[in-house]
Length: 187
Image 1 (tube, rainbow, N blue to C red):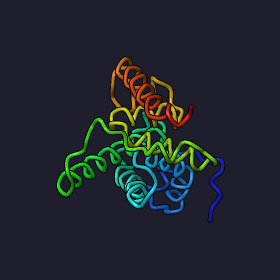
Image 2: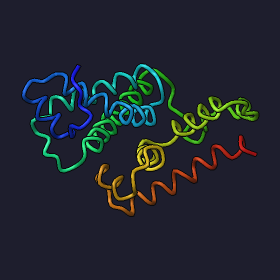
Image 3: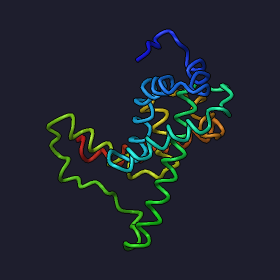
């Protein structure tokens, strides 16, 4: 395996286009954590998230020659991850509407009895993931990018192709909803 520690992402892209599979493997290695955090933040852990994570890199590989470098590779991959995650959420919604009774939009999916006594970090993480899952995708994507991934509000707006004010209002609404969902378990 070649050493790529001093090689920039754009150089790895060029080498990949020239047929160097090791260069693409290095790109995956560098950015898989970012992609995983984004996809799991949007979909929760599981096989669907793994599939979407793989699809992100497949889509990226197929689009390498079109990559203009206007954004960092991590930003580009995050945008692909958000788009594919939103597609998966739509697919899930269609599937559940087809096979299940219509959801009760006023019902919160967290069983608060299970979360009264948080005994470990894993329990807390699971509770937060369930709360995130209850958010509408348009709010969840803002929370994942801004609060979990740590992107600035401006970067989040650019990735989601939304006005800055829309990102701020969605973030505020999402935080209010998360507080409402999590409040009974924190008291």
